[in-house]
Length: 219
Image (tube, rainbow, N blue to C red; front, side):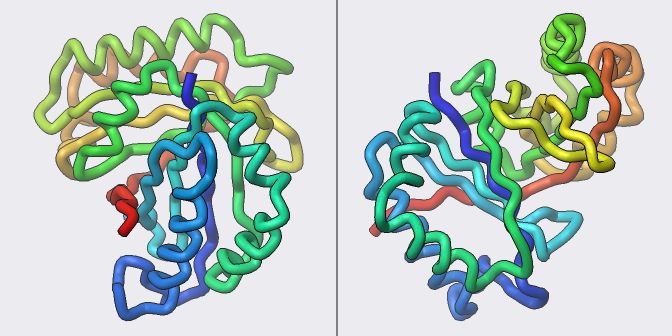
């Protein structure tokens, strides 16, 4: 199953990678060009958070997690990291997710807006009921077919993430929308209110943001 490398990069204030004349745009082209040459690299999607322009989100699809690890073991990786670091104000957050449906993920990232939500769990493992709840949440969301919904999928992170100084198991969900407003409108519906208990099963915390994801095309 393909693995998605999820990376959140804190950008230097005022950086605008969407502007071709901005230096950060050249850095991304260089780094993405290097990635595109790696064995097992499938696709690169990227975009700043709509809620925070200083946060850059990357969705990098690999054949599997071992392909990314093999790249990290290469001699060129240090120079690659340093080049990326020239546009960052701090350390990135990087983790890996196997989304349940690669086809749904493709539809989500092709949408105008991608809702990204990360659920943190207190337990040593993600409770089975939580997995079942997320399956039911996505099923109900798609069954309701709210205006602007593209698709929905989720997956468990290989790595634990820190919340309040504690390492937590996490699940990442992504939902594609035609606009942020379409998502906001869905939040007011009975369909969402009925589905929310399934999403919240066993969770400690949830973080959500939106990204207008672009796809990197080499050449």
